[in-house]
Length: 116
Image 1 (cartoon, one colour):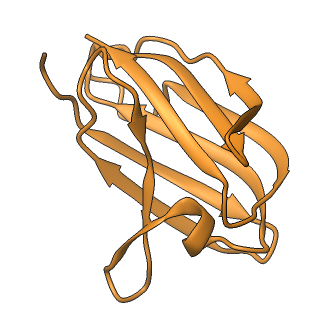
Image 2: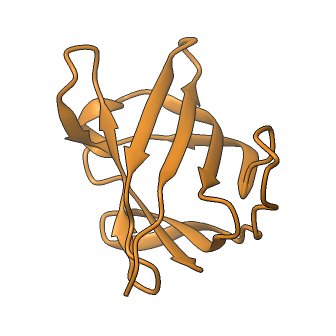
């Protein structure tokens, strides 16, 4: 299994733009975490509790494929999105860029699956 670089943003209704930076393993599900203003990595439910997600944009390394992004709340799938392959040398291209309206509670988890 290899890893890929993931950069992304989650925008919320309060105007917040929250950074995601991780190295998910290809072929394995990875729960995304958020960096807060202090630079601490937190779960999505803790970092964005009582906010509403408006946009999710995910960018993987050149040539990597975002096979799915699944949102669960209380352990149940509430949303599922399917991404695409990122074309090499195209810095403004995302694997997934969606506008949504998802309220966040403490149990909210975003999980991605990717392949190379």
